[in-house]
Picture 1 (tube, rainbow, N blue to C red):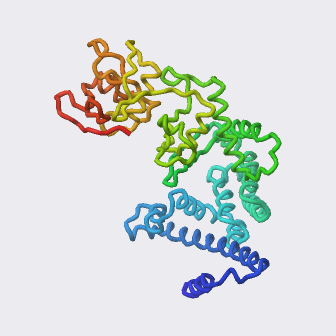
Picture 2 (cartoon, rainbow, N blue to C red; picture 1 turned 60 degrees about the vertical axis):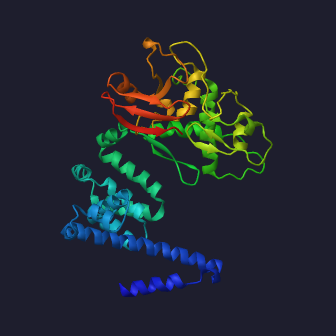
Picture 3 (tube, helix red, strand yellow; picture 1 turned 180 degrees about the horizontal axis):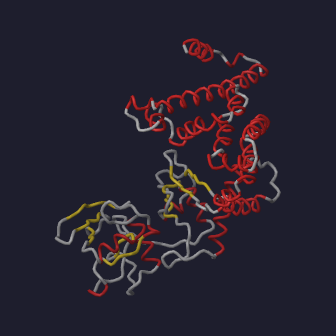
Length: 404
């Protein structure tokens, strides 16, 4: 290990800027092979530690948990290494290719993941030699990318375990999440079943199918992201989406009227805000306003929306919009449910003479709306402010909080 560390130290000290193009490409190729061999060695060492239950020395419950705690690996990475190590033992050809650096850890994972005990047994019952399959798949992995190797593995699985592939096809779980990052960008992540992914891919491909304008240098990923936004915008503009809380779904931008009308780059002009994604610069708000309906909400000296003064039980779209701007989210103590999940609650109940107005409205999610009606809780707002209080049925305060 000391020799290995010394070699890595020498590599770190190498001035890559002095290398020719040929030399640096040769180095990348060599390092790729070495990285594969290192991954194979790590997998083998993890397998030995796993078999011996060496992780118990440090009080870990499993080798996966030890890798996560001691090596700070992501859960999925730890699982992949342990699982690959356990199954690659029965695949000597794949193990040899991995150890020689001829295939990557991703190749090894694709092959070993399919080799479940049940499938190995079914292959034997069908007269399919595991050793022969191992040689074929290892050779395929040497010549193709992990994705292409996966297609070959799928064909093998379909041949020996059609019931298993049917079960996998029945798994239509889909996950998609959006989260705002610290850099001001919004990050998306998800996974789809093959059929669901095909629907999405086909729709995006249709939007990407047109001729590119001259000078368009977008990458495929950038083009695809623009197509996804166009797909969402087309659905909103088309009017086919279901109403949300009695109103057609739309992108909401809040900006001061003076900022909207100000010249580009004018000093002292505050930006706008999107309903979910948050703050944007004035120019972005002005761009969105070029192709949008503008709704005026009059505010008082303190900046809070004034009463819309409509005497009806159900809050109008204008009242709801004003309440959303003022409250920002569910006003119940400790809850940040976004406006689209909330109702406009009558602080003083309609049946008790409470008006349908901004002043008497409170944004509450379904759970806490129920808590205020059936659970004995109540909310109140300090007059002229966006500070809300949550009260228990015995009159004690749970917590006070300010709006956005």
